[in-house]
Every structure is written in C-alpha cells, then in structure tokens.
Length: 192
Image (cartoon, rainbow, N blue to C red; front, side):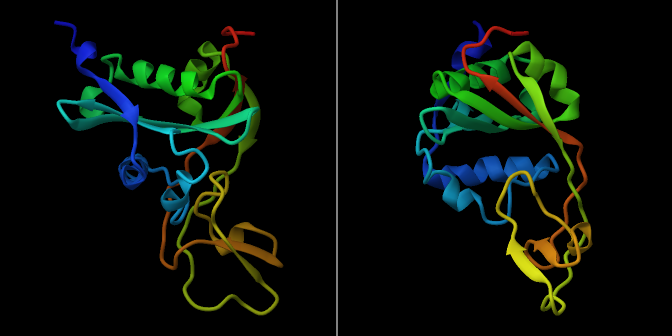
C-alpha cells in the first residue's frame, strides 16, 4: 500500500494554527510575537494540515491577501516523516489554494534550489537579528514598535537606528537564520 495515500490534507481550524507556530519555533523560526491568533482573519482557508491516522504530519500556509497576492509559510513536515513525499503533497495543495496569484515566501537559504525548481525567483535577501530583548521602558527618544511582520522576526533593540527600536516580548530570544524573500506567480513553469 502506498503510504502517501494515507495523508489527509485539510484546512486548519483557527485554534489549530498554534500547531504550525509551535513547529516553526521548534525549527528555530518564529512567525512573530502573538501573530498566530490573527493569521486566520485574513484567509480562514489558508492554513493546511496533513494528517496520518489523525495525527499532525505536515503543515503549510498559503494566505490569499487579495486577488493578486498570496504568501506561503509554515512549510514543515514532522522530522520523523521527512523524505516520504508528504511535503510535496501539502505544498501542492497550498499552491493550488493560491490560484493565479503571485506567491511570496520567506525561506531559508538551504532550500533555495527547491524554490527555484517550483518556479520561484529571489526577490531580495532578508537580514534577521537575534538576541535578548531588554525588559523595562525604552530609553528616552526611542519609539518602541511591536514585532508583527514575518520579515522582522524577533529583534534586539540595538539592531536598529537609535531613534527607532523594534522589540517583542521581554526576555524573548531568537536564533539567527539566513533567509531570503522569494516570489513566484502560481502556475508558472519552473525556471520561467
């Protein structure tokens, strides 16, 4: 029996998005402080889970922001199930959800070749910073902004110009991870 046939892919319920966020954190990624609660408000059908015998096996999101743009993320297969084709199956379901929209993704450098094979091309590199955020009030003259964008991740106050600081929850940490923003039009042929 083909074990791929046992993978059931469905849209996640809003309360299941925490599974994807937790898996991302376990990989050393972080989608943003408290962002999981608001993700489904943009596209309630944009988060997918692949299940084997009722247990989570893979996650991905492809959120349609409007009729022209979608953003793909949370592409994770449980470590003990990698290399069995489950990732490609859930990837295809997410890309299909985007329809004819341009798809953006923020991905690790190690996967660049795979993104190119799927028709994506590099749009620009991201710089991510990591460290421990100081507790207490911001120094005088500093504007404190909430960390909400996937491209900012968790950042240290020293990472930005003196007059503008970005921060997340006090005491939070983040591993540095090289990444790049990728973009493709759904349905484009690889290498186009």
